[in-house]
Length: 227
Length: 405
Ligand SMILES: Nc1ncnc2c1ncn2[C@@H]1O[C@H](COP(=O)(O)OP(=O)(O)OP(=O)(O)O)[C@@H](O)[C@H]1O
Ligand SMILES: [Mg+2]
Image (cartoon, rainbow over all chains, first blue to last red; front, side, top):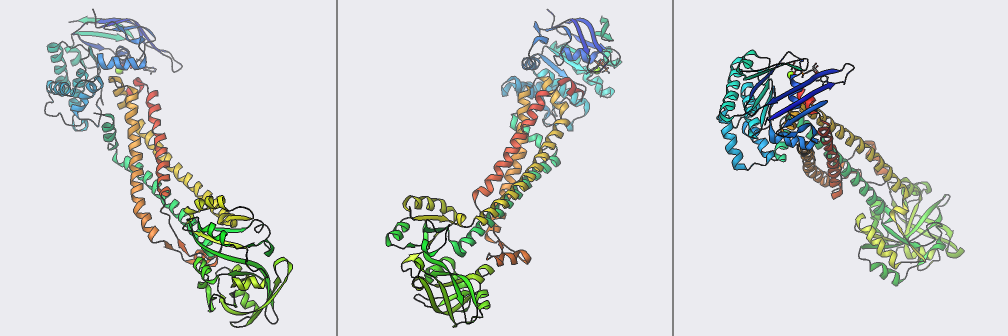
């Protein structure tokens, strides 16, 4: 069974006079352990698609089924809970809670999940070591570089043991070295722990690393290649 | 990380802003406490003055006397009345008076004045009458002389040891006439009193008015204003017709009006002060919410319930309020303690007016608990209410929009 099942997904914005068909009839499915990139020109609907997959935005039409749950049918509070238990998020920037240290940021979500202190600390340490920040556990985000912050964000996304991780342009604000570094970590986690990553990007080097490349244009999937 | 801890750390993210907000709350609490203390202090000072100057806290009169102040509406002083009053433990002092009107004359000049019969020693204990004697002497017990106000003496061109003639109507229409020696001249601060008051020994006065054993009032004191309600309650249970209990506020409605209108002015000032504080806190919270929208978006996206986030922000606002209120309270205490012990001595016109109406030229402060806790409660309630703003704000937050920043 697929981790994510997307059926006939539409998103129409009609807040302004012009109707925008940001996502226009997308059908996709993702399997456990995928390392998939969503690419496409600016305004093609990548963010809109990822937001709907992550349950942050609601579709105008269609279904998103995550592990058998039709998430677009969930009530607001339940949906937040669902995200906490099943989906890891990495955003473009300012992912972290500024007043919390790297460790506390990673622990934060496990706290919400009610994981015991002992388990939390163990897992946090493992994750921060895995993203190469074992020595920066107690730093606040403002004391970390952009690349380090994104790595903490990846560690946090994994903390809840999600079914998959969504990352909307996670490297957009990073230099090429940090980009490569972050991708390597994500790839390693994908390979070694079989973690599903779905990310959008503009960066050709990032696209090259992906095992599956989905190209969208005008809200439609125009190609879907597996390597 | 619990909510309170996160909230506490958030406070110190923008130190300057937190400081300014805390400071504005602090000043609000401090200024309103200071103002209230000053107001309350000056009211009790005023009441104290008026009460100790003449009226006493309570008077026992004939029930018709207040409406119709004639010697015919006097009453007989009985031992049982005295012992009844003395049974009320709040009453600290008692002095009798017989008051009526008379024409006061010297050789060629006459003037109307109030004649007050007093027990010299008792009266002096209660009102400190003797301190106004600037020429001659105060009355001794069984004295057959009189005292009069300075302006009256001046008008009548009367000097110490001159003989003064008093003419009036006595009890139940009998004629009253007598010659008295001027013992002393009273330099009252109030021109009203100075122009229109004559004092003599009670028995002497009763004789003059052919009203032996009669009084127009018994003047009672309690320790201070706070003992008055209880004393009054007890007295009203045991003193009935034909007597009547009058309290200082019933006898001096002008003073009550003055205090009430001053209080109203104070309330308006406080409302303005509280409004400034409210807008200050409100603005800070709005600014903070706006700046941190993106962060809130991330928190909700990764799985934090809006109610939990709202709680954190609620605590943040409450902590700011609490900090300001506690600081304001802590600084008010020693400040007001100081001014309570060292009232501000007034100078200039204000002082002169006060002296003229017989009031010490002091700005007194009150040390009553309500002075403190009223402001603390009000400002805290204001912050508490404003603390709900983030709750509604977060509830309406659109995650996708917030993430866009
Ligand atoms: N809230 C909105 N209201 C109206 N139109 C919107 C809204 N959000 C997105 N759009 C429109 O939907 C379309 C898809 O936007 P989206 O952000 O998904 O594109 P994208 O592929 O992520 O672009 P980029 O590569 O620049 O991030 C765009 O035409 C955009 O203008
Ligand atoms: Mg985008």
